[in-house]
Image 1 (tube, rainbow over the protein chains, first blue to last red):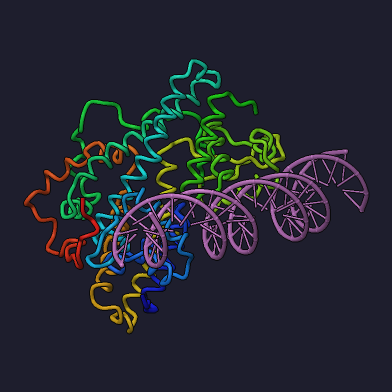
Image 2 (cartoon, chains in turn yellow, red, brown, orange):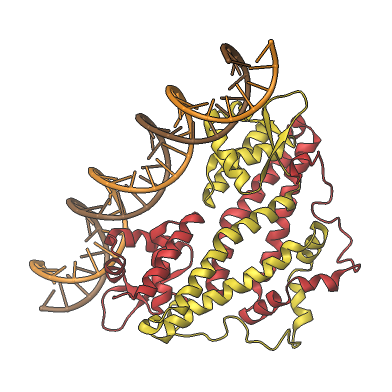
Length: 195
Length: 195
DNA sequence: CTGCAATTTCTGTGAATAAAGAAATAAAAA
DNA sequence: TTTTTATTTCTTTATTCACAGAAATTGCAG
């Protein structure tokens, strides 16, 4: 496929962004290309268009499929596999958030819980244990919150975002529930956070 | 400093997580150590504790300072520089989000805007242009939303998270404003997003 | 069942990144 | 001012990662 200068720049930038967020540059570029194309593409065309090796595309596609970002599609009258991604950007965002949550946040919460249940936890003193606990509580909060957000359809999600921080006005002085607020018990000096 | 098994595991895991999100492993480990320690530490002690070169610590600290995560502190009766981080986990989360937003989201929005203002934009057809635009709109929404969230203090933020998706009930059928919802005009086939 | 086309897996190479050590600089005490 | 200690910067080495090409496998068609 022949790429316009605009498409080329878009793909290049997206590859760069991916790299900064721990995603392989080529993987990100391929996804950007499929998003822009809007229609499923065969692997060799992807390779040609981006100027990377066919095998590289194969592995990158496998990665994207593992992330549920790309699906195998068959096209009438063509033996080759075609690969496509959703053209709904909110769909894609949801998928990425969901996957990162499952692969990274949840396992981290599990590790923290494990550390907190260890019998030798207090060797370092209660303050350090409390900090590990605070981190766990925070990640749990974010996890539960994103879980709920992921269930919303695109239009509702967009509205919630638009409402933004104005939500706080609905909360002010109006307790959400009786539990302790996350990050409530702060420990240790804050000298390092000074101006 | 002597590390307990718990602390060691915490730091190792955090380094691993950092790596997955595009942060240098040592940089993440140093930050984890400072968070756990709760008190500012001199560079050589960090190097000893983590078993990395003194120069490596120097460079990593510089990086953490650039991220506004670590501050230089002076300790009475000690010539050496000490480095500390906030022990408020929500503080840290806010800082990380703010920095990533400024370094990566905002510049990306700028690039997309630039692409969209290019005279040769329509070379690829209106559908591709529309997809780039949708991405820009989404990032703008997220940016504006996070901007507002970052202003909230820890307690309010925790409450907003607890409220979670229940916010939607407040919205249902009750338009937030008159503008078009983000991601509204979907284009191209969705064949790739099948079951 | 044979042969071609498509695709994946494996392996070696090159590039980018990270880290160590050496050298240079800066700062403070004697 | 000299000496010692702390810190950074620069250079070299090592490790990791990405990628290409070759080899192997799969699957369809004749």
